[in-house]
Length: 184
Image 1 (cartoon, rainbow, N blue to C red):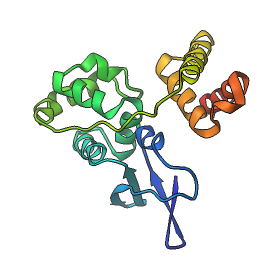
Image 2 (spheres, one colour):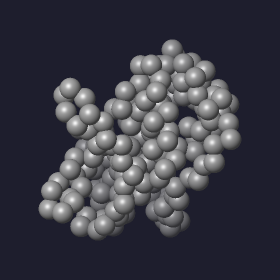
Image 3 (cartoon, rainbow, N blue to C red):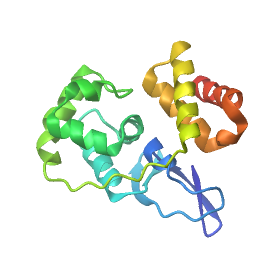
Image 4 (cartoon, one colour):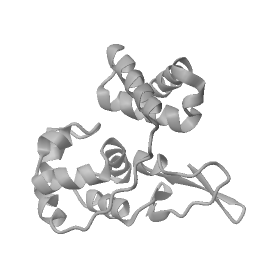
């Protein structure tokens, strides 16, 4: 995303867990950031909660996980679920995250299991869906699964389509938008 501060636009990499809770365009947002300086340049990673930023820092501390993969991991699993999976050492659940294989899941479970115990965690509020919207979301996810997409990818694409276009465009418009997201 591009965040404008005092007339200057900054590219900020954010996980989907943050994206789904952003306000509309031209509205103010407070992001907690982590700025990383590397040979190839400066990268800024943004989060809506301290918990997300802490998880990002912990993930980046594991061998084989850089900031991009840490952001992808936070996009592939809700922060609260990640804490639960890491606390339990559930490497099978961790392997379900896109980009995390068997070896990496095992390393994450081993290295972060003890660090997760006793971490106070407050999940971001999930947006409330009206009953008809919830049914529409389930229908869209089911349609994408029937087209051969993995449930998690289908769910993320539907959530992104809903965030971008809203439910007013109906099933056909949302399925087109979700397919566009999946093939981009």
